[in-house]
Figure 1 (spheres, rainbow, N blue to C red):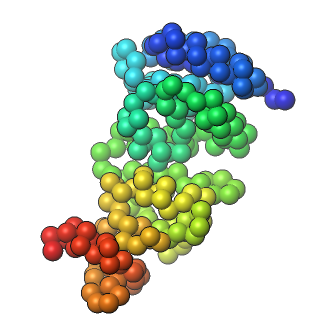
Figure 2 (cartoon, helix red, strand yellow):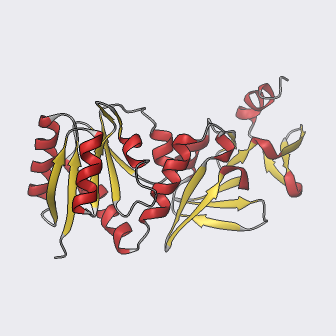
Figure 3 (cartoon, one colour):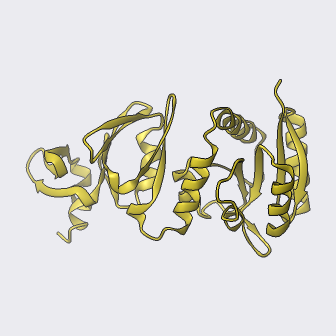
Length: 250
């Protein structure tokens, strides 16, 4: 069994002890090197220990876990966020394909998160995900946000404004880009809908999610359709018609 190193950064001693105990019991391949209870100490122990994984609380005295990450221009470690706040910047976290654990931490979710972190380490996918996350938390324009699109053999980082629409394919999703290329993502359309519904995307049909910035027309009738950039036509479900027209003040 390969061994991987980790540090835990959390201002609550009980939370540090609980997570440490869970790791020792259920994920023995993780060796905990050190602990910190604030941002400054966290940066210091990361630089000192060069861990594979950092378990990082979101809210701490003197700043947030996000502030800590911005101290590293090219992070060379995997991050797993821990937070008691279910809505705290989770959009940015999800877009970047970084894992987070809600407190109290569930052992099964911890095991899955560590497994995914180790896979990223072995595939050397660390920097792009963290750099994408740091870009997203400092960017105020939703269409300029970046998204990590996972596939069966890796991932692609794209800007939201590059995506015209997404189409469901069972538990996968075909993503269609401005460059008239598509990519198969190993996530369901529902997962993308959860991430993008407040980022300028709309779900006109159970099988589609569209970027509203590329709507160029609408045809009503028994089978209403939405016309997108590049002469793309998407079916508009009857149940979604009123909601769609309201977006245009109709």
